[in-house]
Image (cartoon, rainbow over the protein chains, first blue to last red):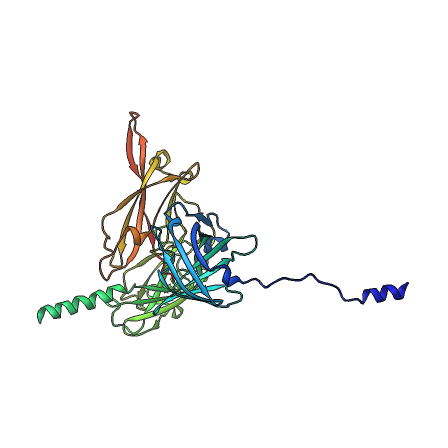
Length: 157
Length: 257
């Protein structure tokens, strides 16, 4: 009896197939229309003050902003930002984009000539989520302290 | 040739005016943060001196003020108050608010200072007030969201009637807010702009704008600060509506990247 239990315990466990690795970069490929904009007072949040964030989607015509991120051969290529009547979200309207990690991108670097801009991926549009979430951080120019962030949610067009 | 000479002189003066004096590093700080003051005494009673001493005081114009612990006496400044030379007519000094004034962050709202000779025979004008960043949230009638903003941010001004102390502010039904913008030479940028408010809570009215969308500075200038006030109506003694405005509140932009 004991020998059977010990023998059975030594059998290799069978794990479910994890499936194909998700391609996060490919998931952001395409044209995205802004659906929600939120402004966060990061300093107030850090200090636990009231009034930490504000939904600014309808304060200005943010929803007219459209962003296209092109991917080719599993590598980022060009981007196009069409603000419409929206306030400026990124500094550049077109150019090339790169990421910090092709498999698990976190930062998106937009560039056009010598001009660059950085935005952060706040959420991949994979699995149950079909929302692309981008975050733009703003820091004190002297100290680098994070003061404000803007969170933008996009729906695939 | 003479015109070119004057142009160069004005350009030189213009560049000089761009620098903030005094300047602080970091640009924003709480009473518990160490901050370095850099000050140029050119054109003051201290121009040309080799040694300068700091005379510093908390909460100028407010209750609960205190002298800096390094001050010493007016005719014999303490050596701990001596500034570090940083070039011709330029000095720096490093301090932490709570240590300098022996007060808590809750007690410290602002500070002012001047530079003087050790024996008090020469001095600059007062430089004041400079505000500490709060470590605790202090509710107020007028509030900006976010608390620190740059020229390209969405700026929301808020009128919270719970904290009104004047009769007009307590009785006003706010409808609009007026912004006056200033550049780095303290000149008004364009005409004041009045925009509508929306009611966002039982006692709160809010309005939003983007500074560099609503205001364009002159060539070579940049937006530096703005003042805002709330406008509305209240009933006079005859029961007739009359227009009233709150006091102006000033906000200086924080440079962000």
